[in-house]
Length: 112
Image (tube, rainbow, N blue to C red; front, side, top):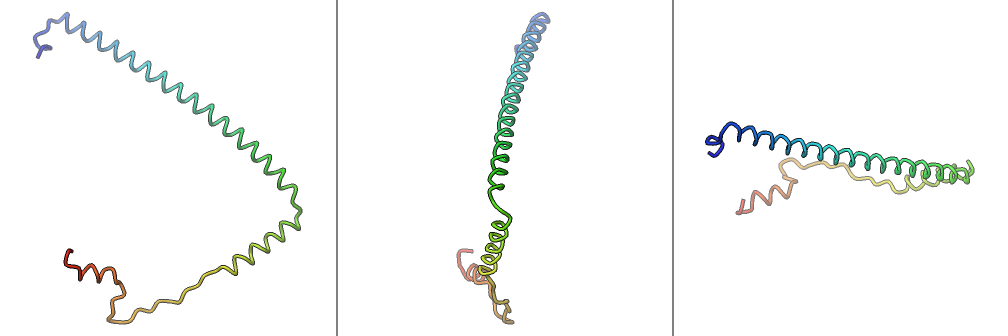
């Protein structure tokens, strides 16, 4: 209500004050956003350097193994995977019999 009763010079002064406040908030928001982006970029650069170092260490470790060792390891892994395979019998439902006990219990339950 006070806005309607205010004079035109008060309207102008209030609008200028609001625009300056908005401008300051936008500037501070952009500064904060830029700082966060710079910190994020620095962190990703550090992570990339760490990843490169880890890859170079891994390459050095790989050079310690001979091709024969890798072949033996591969054969052992294949043998383990074949021995641990799990099978199951095929399911053949009986006609006229419900095999879904959960639904049957829910149908018979008085609460539902």
